[in-house]
Length: 215
Image 1: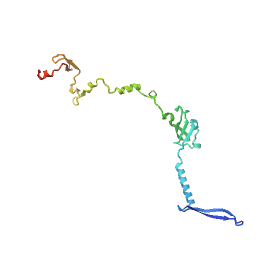
Image 2: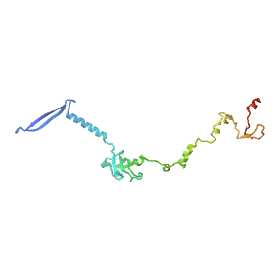
Image 3: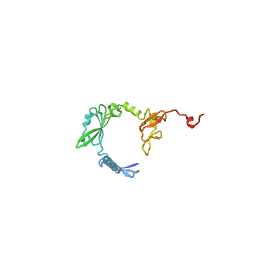
Image 4: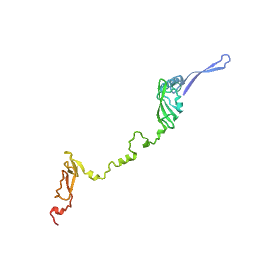
């Protein structure tokens, strides 16, 4: 609640009221006069002006020519100012549509750099348009990934390992002692020359005959 103290001025000759004069407005709630509130408001506005001083403004222009018409002196373009150009097709890097630019000011000269463009927001990149890509086609690369762990002789390969101490090749748990190749014979009496190869006998096996049981 505020209380207004007024003084009425009169014309001494006619007795008519000339004016109403306020000594001040006193706010009972805050216990301050209106002049104090006005002073505090002015201080707050000055602080706000100081806070926003130097902040880079942003602009919206219809085309590149209108963007280039912006100046430091008349439009207060600052380093960090943005300009949204609705039709940026005059930019050689923009086929069509809008683009956003960032200003850098040096000695009164404005240099605009493209930040993004509408075309790139929903771009669908095709393999054929990638620069520096491998010479292989996308389908060839996909097939190479599919075949990366496919081997027709995977069972044989799974049986190959190496001895941790000697480093010799091991196949199905048997150390090959550096031998090379495998020679196949039909029985143990075969006198073939193996020349350092592994001798592998392929013949029918009779478990009853080996155990001495004729039954």
